[in-house]
Image (cartoon, rainbow, N blue to C red; front, side, top):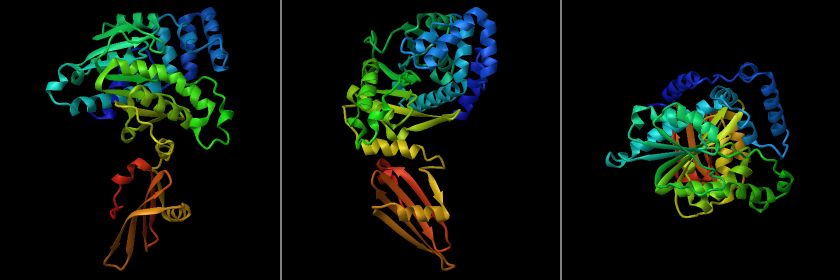
Length: 378
């Protein structure tokens, strides 16, 4: 089933559960005020404002504890309904890909854990798809009142209270861990420490962020057996958070699969969707992770495409380059086109130029260099 089909089905499912899709801030707030009553809504609004302003006495949990009914919770989540829909569809599609990649005999006893499940919408939705009927789902959250709301649905999911930021899991042996927006990186970071630094790994901000996520990733690793997989969509505002998370994951025994790195882009947000596999700690080069992050921000096509004069000019300006492969094709009309694969620092370049004036440049992360071949059918 394609990700678009999953998205259509899940959109209908979330609407049935009371989410406003697409998200409409004013409408959601009017519905919340009606559901809560004026007094309770005023208290809730004050908590939201304090969290938004960075008051250290208030966290995202302060907002969660302010909503006490399922209707209120799902209206609150509606502020992220567009993001949630994209995340749910990506999770469903990737879980399906994982299931179909396994042999029939190994699919019979699959166990999937969701961390940070809130009211259990994701696990409950996934458990209802026929392609996941052979999977046992367990969903974890630290908000007990959310878990009670989740259990009321009667889904084929075991809902368990667990604070994965500070407690070791009581269970293990899962095949897959799902984490959708399950780490909050919105704390105030002293980013002035990054200014002028040659390496982000030398900054205090990096050390703080790595420490913030280390215990979480270690506890998630304890959930799965060897060969297990973590599918995570996490808000990472910048390369700093991405680097800190990837390094903390490696230390915990997770290796990021950069070939499967994708981007959820909605509401002016750019959120990485990542797949991690269990493995021995291997610290990737900072420039490799930086190139993967940067290449993902080039939004026009695979690798980021620059066409015609811009492509030719940019290719000339990028230095120093090392040409790895080069090809040439002559056409019956006398025109010629060359195709080049090169490396330039932390990037892999694929460039084509023809005597007709045609030019095209793709910029890929360096780890994809070996996969690139000269192509003439542009």
